[in-house]
Length: 299
Image 1 (cartoon, rainbow, N blue to C red):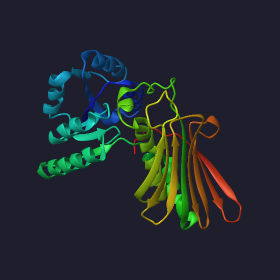
Image 2 (cartoon, one colour):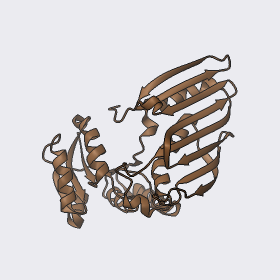
Image 3 (cartoon, rainbow, N blue to C red):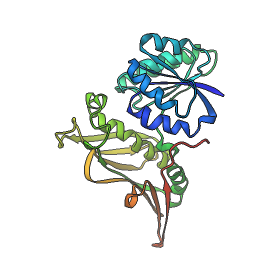
């Protein structure tokens, strides 16, 4: 059984990581939770103690060094402010630990390129392969995995639309998140990662080029809070990605139009926590299935 540690003790760790990890607690041993401050680390450990026994509280530089030096800890989840994650992840990788790192992968393209270069160097020198993975979950959702299979039924792709009308407002616990506000376009980056991951999963190929225009409309949010873009896929198809960070009419929609039909995925259909997948054929017939939001799966 693997032994892991969590690097970070913020809202996301307390409200998402610990509850979800408790559902698969038979697969690993949670040994420690680290934070910059003792108070934050202790608060997270108190929550963890409800489902895990003997979780150690670590904080500050000394606590981080303890985790780095602990050879029994083979993997860590890095769940920190976006600006601080990469340096910590690279330290853990250099110590021979696998890393599951929260999004974003880096603060900028330049930082990511540097980090990837360092990761390759670390991997080349490591006695065994160390894995660095970004914790993006949409690509594992059964609805989107199923759509990756269904997309073959619509034939050659002609157009792709990704329409996002978010609901980021003062009632959301992440609305006042400092790291998202300190990033230029932090909310678009943090939220948009999921929708692009869903796009890549459904179409089965990569985005090769993109052009976008942005605007700042909602003064309660940092700029920009709206983006309209055109992208080109490596399969030759083009599409649009439109995102509003805070809308009064929330909607999440992927739509792929092909020569033989159309595939559409709508999240949050009629207020349900999941995805409505609809396949429209050339004969005018359609079939729809609802997939609940999955979360953590053992497989």
